[in-house]
Length: 288
Image (cartoon, rainbow, N blue to C red; front, side):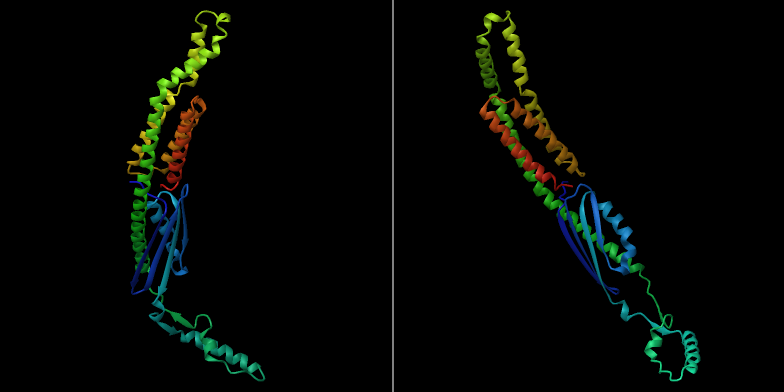
């Protein structure tokens, strides 16, 4: 299955702890690069979130944003540590006796002193698990989106492969005529030197030049590489790097074909081949 690296997903959940929302965005990247934005209350999940994303995705720059609107503040029980208040009161009395005109102490100031208010912190384990489960659902949506976009990329690449095959077939059909034209051209150039060359030397020179200008191997390799692209597209694994390598090989053969060309039509076909290969390469950059 071909997966695109460009996708977006959003999942929301409301429970007794509050409202959770994951937003995932991904674009193409050579490797897997995960960036996180999370509230401090849930920062302890960071390592597990990275592991969970890495288990599901292999490439792409992935932005994961978690938002949490808590309702826990309304449920947290607040109590006063009376022992601490008594100790503070004794200290205030001692200080007040030493002052000529002590100011009245505001009870709010006392409540704000460290240790006076005791907070009963809730168990956040279920909240953490809810956030991870919601992330898994968001990743499911993202992978589905990547798969849909990947199918479109696959279709585009297959269409370009068909176009490459058609151009290569045009070259193959012209090979016999090209060989005859090449032979005639070389014979005309060597004709003036017939008297100066040994018997059979002209045939040797023609054979050597014809071998240098022969494009059979390039045509065969183009066909082979295109078939390999089709085969790779059917694999159920990340294939982006493999396809990128095949684009380099295809481009190398197209360049060689152009450099050996002695015919304007073959030169034009070589240019068209390079255009198609570049179009495929642009699509491949977005495949996982």
